[in-house]
Image (cartoon, one colour):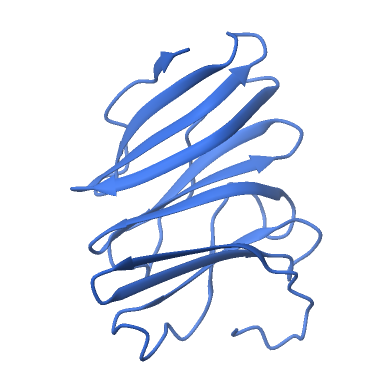
Length: 168
């Protein structure tokens, strides 16, 4: 824990990925306010040493100002992706990624480009061969009933490489 303020963390929803000798850890905590922020740290030597600071991952909102409902962490070599489910009254998904083992992260990019109310549940994420594969169950109030959405995202260049694929 690199926080020297003594703030109450209330950590929860911890996640761990092991990829060879690399260990990636993420968790939610409330050190910055009433909303949950997502933090990340890594070890590239099997846990003998850890990154010197905890990295707050961009969730599409200012630090401490929004509730992160859920997230998924996935890795493939030095490529990492995190799918983040937020709720500011409208549930949304964001993705952020790293190509250097978690030393630096891209700004969060919206996965769900919708307006109005939504209900997004059962998020899933897998990384393989420079791509993040995303699945979730979503109900966009004004668009369609509950559907399973599948997307493919490039973790090397950033854009989605497939449109939404929906089925119920």
